[in-house]
Length: 113
Figure 1 (tube, rainbow, N blue to C red):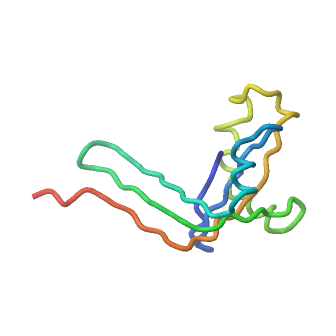
Figure 2: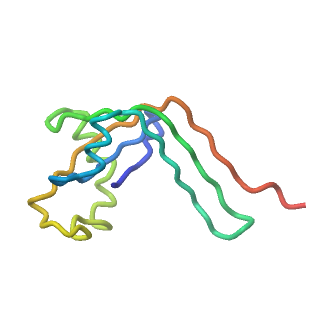
């Protein structure tokens, strides 16, 4: 699952990749309420984390919103591909989703004394 943060719209854009027996897809069908935890770590005194909760909504593939979502990722498209999965690429179904943020907070190390 790839994601990025859209600073202008204050939202996260996701591109999960589903397959026939996808656990992610099954869980999304049960409930669109999700949480995301991500962090950046350099060393024990230089790190930060973000925790986001909200609702994940599918973005229709042929809409301006989907085109905009793909543009957010265009710069990094060559970094990751679908080759990390066991299934062949045609058997995978990447889709665009928007995380509507309900709450966002995080942590960082205390200041050095």
